[in-house]
Image (tube, rainbow, N blue to C red; front, side, top):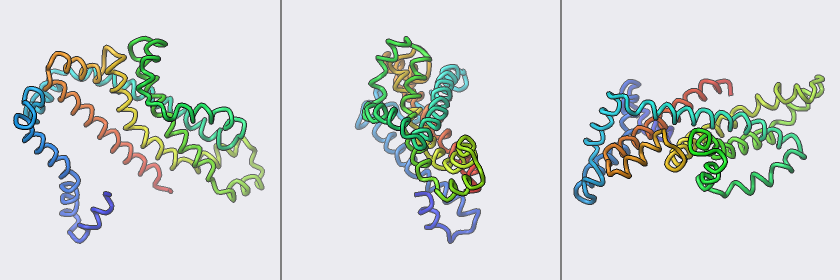
Amino acid sequence: MRHATSRRIEGLPAPVQGVAQTLVDWIPLGILVVLWEIASGTVVAEAVLPPPTTVSSRIANLVVTGEVFSHLFISLFRIGVGLGLSILIGVLLGIGMARSDPVENFFDIFLSMTYPIPKTALVPLAILWLGVGTEAAILIVFLACLLPIVLNAYNAAVDVDQNLVWSAQMMGTSDREMLYKVIFPATVPEIMTGVRQAVPIAFIALVSAELIASNQGIGYLILTSGQIGNYPTMFANIVIISAVAFVAVRGFEETRDRVLVWT
């Protein structure tokens, strides 16, 4: 989508093109904010749907007082650990399933059975096993992010050019060396795609888990604010975590493009 937009304005001078591209990218969000402002107090009562100006003021207050940061750091820690574990285990599992029939036969049934299950449905089990808190939230993030990483690593390892494998074998490369010298480097682009898919999923799973199984974090703030009718604060926290998720996704995309410049 971004490339298509660039083609439509590529006739402009480079500095103007950059500004125009930025404006075009943010137009949908601007339209949403305008509609939100109009709907507040007309379509929906202002007490239930506070206008963007009120929410913006509350965001500024939360940032200036620092009230939001302790909960935000806890949420980001949970995402980091859960996503990190899913990357580590997902890559190993995906490549292992692609290169070993026994491994694939053993794990395929579990992945097939758990794929259709909404991971938030596992929150009660996580609470039962781990209690309310960080461990349960990390488990939900891990389970939610695992599958896209496994699938992308698996598909990439299956599709590795056999000519590369045969050439490495002819040069005397052992099976162990084959994994980290040939297979893994060839799968990196697809693995990064899987991680890109998992990053927003991690935020969704984290907030869902914190709404039910936590007494800290952004999800917990959203829940408690809504329960007491403090809707400006509730919407402020929703906007904050949405903005952080947006930055995380865009930041990862920039990092991926730099890492994969050789592809």
